[in-house]
Picture (tube, rainbow, N blue to C red):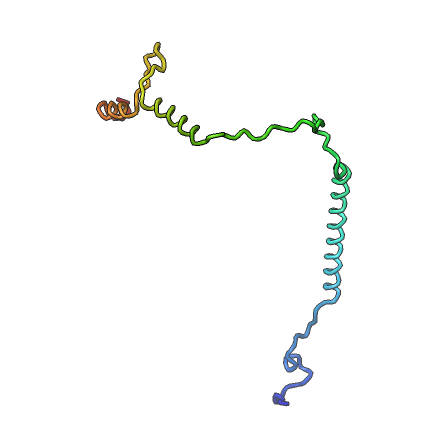
Length: 137
């Protein structure tokens, strides 16, 4: 065992530990505080559970919002397309006819539907409107 020379064995630096220990009263009060908070949290959660349990229907019973308790009528099955490919082809055909044909939108106002290809050619020929010094041309 090695001793340091000229050091008092009763000196706290020689013993190499703190002179003040943990305050037992503070630790005890902190533990008691955590215990009180935990008990209050449990009581609060039990109260909320009891409140919800009082206003909840018993298991297996129907809710009060059911308007037609006659369950003998079964709903019809889902309305699926019998041939989705044919429906898609028909939809695309009607869309293409709208995009590639002429038609009156409003005869009184003179509004006409023009095929997309023809409309793009007219737009290139006429040009897009632009602003010059705040005036729309």
